[in-house]
Length: 416
Length: 93
Ligand SMILES: Cc1cc2nc3c(=O)[nH]c(=O)nc-3n(C[C@H](O)[C@H](O)[C@H](O)COP(=O)(O)OP(=O)(O)OC[C@H]3O[C@@H](n4cnc5c(N)ncnc54)[C@H](O)[C@@H]3O)c2cc1C
Ligand SMILES: [Zn+2]
Image (cartoon, rainbow over all chains, first blue to last red; front, side):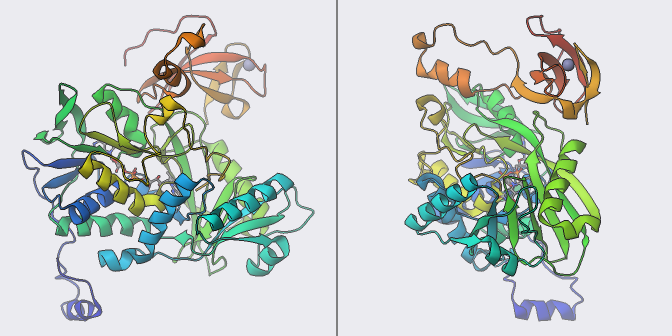
């Protein structure tokens, strides 16, 4: 892999940028691998990267049914934060945050990680109590955060509506300064390029259609490009997790829902941070191109169609209007949906399964983009060692039998 | 937005309804007799099919009654609605 640098930029400018090497190869699948990752989203590609880099597994492949990053990775609103309430999740997301902080250098690829801070607004007394509790819990876990009053919010975010007369008045917020956004496509492409350089085969247009087992153990995969033999399979397919679990013959606690996002026409810089509200349920930031990036809640029914219902759009826009009346005349440019894999406790499942050699990394639901590097890091450890890392041990599939759930729903107010 | 034919009220907009998840999950008659696996399965595991799905809906802003619906989770086509207690219509996946 040729390194990207100022010098390489200058050199390629001389040849009109026509001679850049391709960022990753497109090899034909080999008949057998030491391990295969199903799903070429950010999490799958990160898993492959860390498997190769940290665990020396180079004879591995990522199989993607469409194009890499074409799932939720390329469809999300890119909010990154680590201020979760419970120790288990705080530690996991904070591991990810620390990897984000060095990721562009690590990958030699600009993932445009922008620590512009994230505000989570409170609109009533109980919200404020929960925010104080969460900020304090974050401090105990060494995670940055502060409580911000409504007056201070009005000073820092010029156009937000902090009027006490509004239907759901803003009373305060938690603020995580190290939170922010990243460029979603770049995350997929950066990990793909890094993994490819370490010898990982990234195979697109290759849907997995069957999981072959022998005596409760994985032996290979049926794919759109033929049979591939492998003793280890890491499944990282977000909204399609149940489909793969069905192939392997066990049941999952995840359900697939559409989640929509929106971008507006580009406007001049007006919002330099990320604002989220669970009570009115909407969140907003402004991309470097100038468009407002907006999202809210899932469509309530199960669905695999990557689109959503109109009443959810109305609800989202109503929430944004409540927070920023000034945006009422901004026009929306595009709208789309992704299929998120929600879990009963709003926490991921990262670990072993009833089938030996088959590992699952799913259940990130509406909030897994922020976890991309950390998720790949712990999952690589799990696949390589056939057991979880301390950081993901609590996020097992067995917790739905033992009852040791990690109740982030509500507690952290898991918007994204 | 779906146009949902409530078996009691007729066709109404989706915004009048709430989706109440997978249908035909029987509450165990004797929970104490179940293993942890069986209880966990009842509480948490769901079919989540990519295809035809039998689900419960509630006409929240209408008659406030529950009913079942056969709906496709990719095309979102609504094939049938039927009352609680009635058998599910047959369908080829
Ligand atoms: C609208 C929206 C907004 C969001 N906003 C945020 C946010 O602000 N912050 C945040 O942290 N998170 C957010 N999320 C959640 C986040 O996007 C996801 O949790 C995360 O991107 C999941 O990454 P992934 O790599 O696991 O999944 P994906 O990127 O979906 O990758 C899974 C891949 O598996 C492939 N696949 C599926 N089945 C097969 C098969 N049988 N064979 C081969 N390949 C297969 C798919 O094609 C897909 O590319 C949002 C999600 C959506 C939809
Ligand atoms: Zn009705």
